[in-house]
Length: 308
Picture 1 (tube, one colour):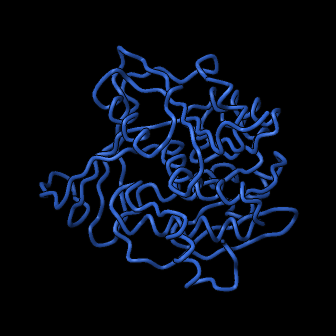
Picture 2 (cartoon, one colour):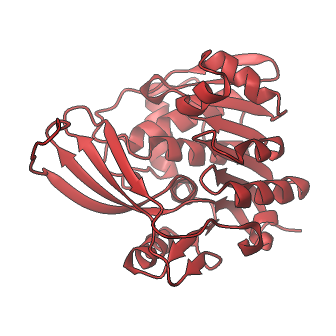
Picture 3 (cartoon, rainbow, N blue to C red):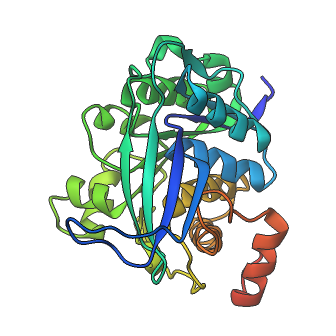
């Protein structure tokens, strides 16, 4: 069967309200916002947007409410060229959203979020044709039942499966055996290794027999384990404005690199670069580069690796 899409994302989407503040507040304090923006967010959704920005054909399956926020989420995804025709609408529910405080000095952020009143996305709500006919499936841990079903069917169909392993919540271990790439946050790494560090976390993740396991380390880059080899890829220095969504962007860029059939080191370096570039703009999506922009950035900093 020919692939209908390069990448299908299954998981969580949201609306992000991004407020830039001069410093993080103490208790019982008022601060005037320097900037307020509204953007699309969510791990799987933003990763899918990243793949689209890099030139891949993409689709997204997630659940939204029948309110203005739900309509805005789908509109913003559609505006990036992401097919949202299989998104699930729960008409009587309130959609998920996040308020994000961004420190104007450091670009670091604190996220306050809610699922609204949406019920979880369930396996029988998935358009499995979009799941099994793509080249690469990206799932997150916020919709574990749907992600596990999608990952299994995709893997059985020969699709490369990557999980954005953000938090080791209930149901996530059922997803991992079907994933070719487990790409984890430091939070997830600490949970799966009982705090024994990134290398121990990689070893724990490799017990599920993926092609590679990766732990993202923020501005420090990432560390990976594949075929018995540990690979460290340093992060890139940029003038960071906001780190919101950097991990989500890393996942989308990493899957792009996987579909290019690059080795794991190149996948890590490329994803580090795209995630760093995102941090130069406010919000999870505004700063995501196009492929030519990413290649130019890398050619100046890593001239010995070919990303063309």
